[in-house]
Image (cartoon, rainbow, N blue to C red; front, side, top):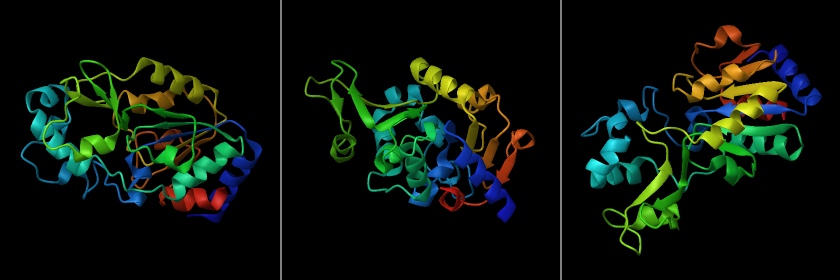
Length: 240
């Protein structure tokens, strides 16, 4: 990490009051939550079905018990705590500098850190709804239920996370686009920028302060004004 680049980012943040952060799974790896595509990520682990299959709309309804077995084991890290990145972003929001977080994560750690304006593109494990009557249930109910979780009315409960074969929430997308398009600084962290349509949202940024914080190269590196290969928490804690 170059001192000059940290100094530049710090100056940008000091002078801005319209920052937006766009994040992916890499934001939460420092909290002990595995990502999907790295060497030790979920997609490289061995299950009876590929994770992409298990986490699909059709599999949820055709193999509901198998879905929930995987979901409870791999998708409900309810004990995880916010890391330095989450805390730094929450502080920037409290200072009036950060206007929004756009996240592909479903773990709720940004809210746990204190962030208020969070666009959860792929939903949240903290919202679970009965498919029959619409009653909401907390994630602890899903975690502790034996077998397939059902509502008091008998209806099937489904997590409000966006599965493969499902579309993103239009209101969430619209809010994220508005925030990104108005931003002075767009900080992108912990995402390979390969999952669409979410990754395509950064194209709505028209400014000249695009910051990428990611361990590996992305297809947007050539558009970035600053690039860091260090952990997100390490970078942000030096500039906030």
